[in-house]
Structures are given as C-alpha cells and as structure tokens.
Length: 338
Image: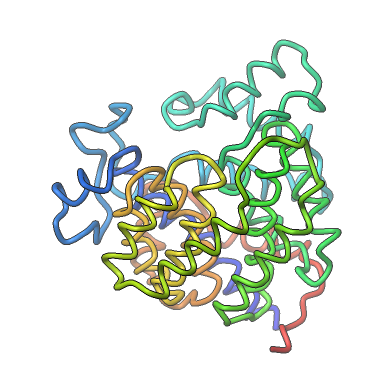
C-alpha cells in the first residue's frame, strides 16, 4: 500500500509542478491572445515569451510561486515532525522573499501584502483577514496528502492554520479545503471524478463559517455552473465558456470552479489538464498547478520520467525526497473503499 500511496503522492507533486510550468508562459494572458499565439493550444513546456507579464525570462519547464510555496509547506511539515505551524511557514516565506531573485516576479498580491504586514509587526491573526485570492489553494496539496478526507473537521482545521497568515477568509479557506480534500481522496486511491465534485461541494458547505466573513458570490453555485458548462459543451467551447462565464483569474471564486471544470474536460489526465489550463487564459499557472496536482494523484503513471526529469533538472527538485517526507506523516494510509 505504501508503494502505491508513494506513487500517487509523487504524482501530486510532479503534476503540480508540471501544471505550474506549463501555465507559466501564458500567465496573465487572455484566452484570445493565447489562441492567437498558440493556435493548437499550449502542448509542451515553453520559456517565458517576449511579452511576458513581468519580463521574467524563465526557462522552459521553470516553476513559479505555486510550486515553491507548496514545497515550503512540505518542508515545514517535516521540520515540525508532522505538526502544522503557521509561524514556521511564514519564516520560510519571508526568508525566500528576502533571498530569492524571483520572489517579486512570481508572488501574488495577497501574499506580498501579508509579508509586508508581518515584517511591520502586525499579528498573524490579522494579516490574512482580507485574503480572498487563490494563494491558499495553490499550495495546499501537502495538507491533503497528510490528512484523511474522511475526517473533514481535522482537514479543514489544518487548512485554516496554513491560511491564517495570508488567506484567512471563508472563501479562500473553502477553496483550499476543497482542493485538499480532493488531494486526500486521490492519494488514498479514489478514482471517481464525480466523487471529486461532490466532495468539493460538501467541504465548501462545511467551511461557510470558517475564517473571516468576507462578501463573495456563492462558490458552490459557481462550481455548479462550471459543471453544467463542461457537461453540455464540446471541449474547446467549454474551455472558452469557463474563461468567459466562470472566470479564470486569481480570485478563489474563479480559480476553483475553473480547476474542476478542467479536471472534468481532461477526464483526469494530468497531461491534458496542463494543456487546457495553459490555454484558458488568466491565472494559467495556478489553475494548472492545482488541476494537474489532483490529476497527477489520479493517474501518476501518465507523468513520464522525461517530464519529471525535466522539472527536476530545471528547478533542482528532488521529488522523491519531498514524497517520502509527506508519506511519513500521512494520516490513515488505507485505500478508499469505493
């Protein structure tokens, strides 16, 4: 069992990095602009384009803050011997922000704002109370790995702890918890995409009173709209409708429905999910990181050694090391019965 779970955990990590790197060149572009530049869609790793949103000059296969923050949480879990410590994560985040040459090019506005507040002495209890963007959901997969989705109370509490410094709003916690629960489900052997939708609805409903109450449309209703779109439209039409009607920007209310729509369109295939996410427009790298992380747990064997090797080489990531750090602290290493 541990060998199977280890394979799925690595699939989540490699898949997340794959989706992140696939979406990096088109981040911040419109659907129409991507279609003009890549008429057949984005089908492989590309370097930053000449008109990159931040003139980053990244290499083909290079990751962004989505994967960097995810791996920070893995290290924090290992440092704290399986316990969650928001302070430990924040210290890693601040250190990276101060020492990295790319942090200012890839970090989201909510995270940057929280870092500045923390450095100015504001309590962690206050720094995340306006954070509604997808910066929580993008990095939450390690919490899904170590938590059992059949114990949602514990899973949501753990997600909230990670969200506290940067994204402590009900909408951000709900979106991140939905992602974490689905990661938990797939690494424990779950294979049903319809179960992923239903699990997400259940978790979102349970998070209604968690975190700071912040005005937002209904995430469940937006999810149901995304589900309707992908069920009634062809793949190409559905992708545009997700962009046009649901949204694919940095706000949780747009990102999470787009992610689940792409998982459905890709039928759980992480390669197809990465191609779709990088072609949808908007926050392509984050949508790709989340969607491909879940799909990578569903079908880890579809992520080839060539893909893993490229990501490892370009970004100096030892996926085996991070996999075993998470496996050591995973709750209830038992298979899903359905």
